[in-house]
Image (cartoon, rainbow, N blue to C red; front, side):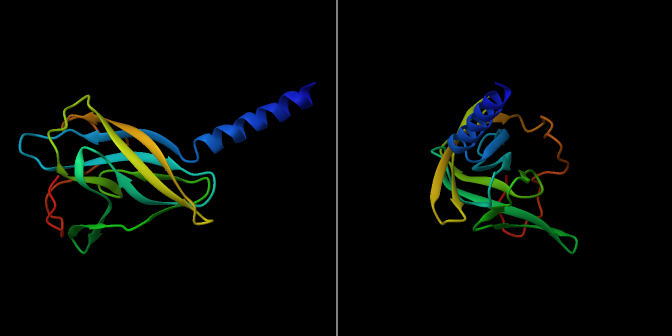
Length: 162
């Protein structure tokens, strides 16, 4: 009887992974201030198999890109990352000061408490793409970022402000 229970548990777990190929945790976005036209979204991604994040879409922004912030010398620079590799079983954190989703040309303000809809587009090792919808809860600018220091201050090489 225990063997049947264990087999069913594994089958249910495998089915859960198949229905949600990438585990998305702690999705949040930074709320904006008046006249701000861009903001960032952050989350933790864990894929069961080698996967790549190849695109992000959102109806709240005209342009949505995955960006990377990197310290070059003593200047923090930001650039678009065409793909974000997700190694099998490893959590990749999108956070202030590192990889993040950049929402630009916003259609309106993002207020604290808003649920910002995001569609993540992933590509598996087999080249097949699949999407996953996520809601990122907007947090006020002064709200603490989970496990992240720094943030999106000035000094980026690309000229984006968020």
